Length: 303
Ligand code: ATP
Ligand code: MG
Image 1 (cartoon, rainbow, N blue to C red):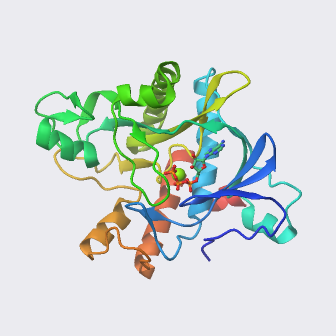
Image 2 (image 1 turned 90 degrees about the horizontal axis):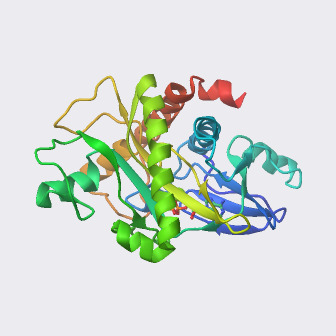
Image 3 (image 1 turned 30 degrees about the vertical axis):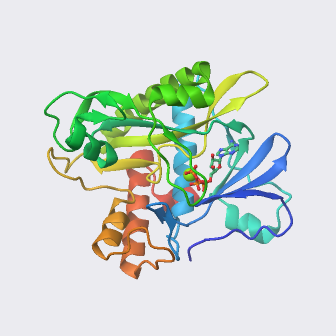
């Protein structure tokens, strides 16, 4: 059964509910970050969920935080652990197991830190028209899905629920969060992406692009990596085996759902119920990506 909404009763105060997650307050410094099985595409939430998706997001994010911490010792993350707080009911404990994480409560910077290693999606559309991506001239003659000479940083705004994020220049990002923090966010984003890209490539997944969020630890003035990281929801994952230039790629992420919606004239429509087949295939794509990246099946990891 897909888990689409949390039922924690009154045991923890609900602070926010996003497209995919619920955020609960544990204490003044700690939050419980819960990934449901909800799935959104083109900024609209589907009526039904994808079984185990929330577990994949949570355990994959935890995997990456641990890996990245080892690779980049100066990196700070919001991750505190996978333990479910004792204060939630027995029934909720069972629901939350492997789909929630304890995180540090931070002031979130209102920009999405997007890094692109390969040209696709909105960047490809813009390049075809203007030769530019986020207002920056790109080399001539790039083909669809080609790797950029260097990964590029293309921030966007963080829109409210129901709104769309908008691409902005790095100068605009600096106006929103301040020059000092903007630089740090860009630098960390590129560093984290490069470390992850290299690891994933060896295992057979190309991380074409990804989105990070950062928060500020106001006590230490440190920029901290938050939210989910390097998951099929926040990234484009391609199969390295079937990768080919000049075309769209076989992917482990929401592209399959997006294509289904587009083909059926459902793109951007509210209240869409995914067919059983779409649910099943999406669920297995997420589980497959998990196994390729972590080396463990989801079943093993959640035992
Ligand atoms: P977004 O497009 O920003 O991800 P969303 O609707 O997809 O929006 P969810 O992913 O469902 O949101 O919920 C996660 C929310 O929790 C995001 O708004 C994110 O900024 C916020 N968040 C992540 N980590 C923290 C943290 N450590 N402290 C406070 N808020 C956090
Ligand atoms: Mg999110």
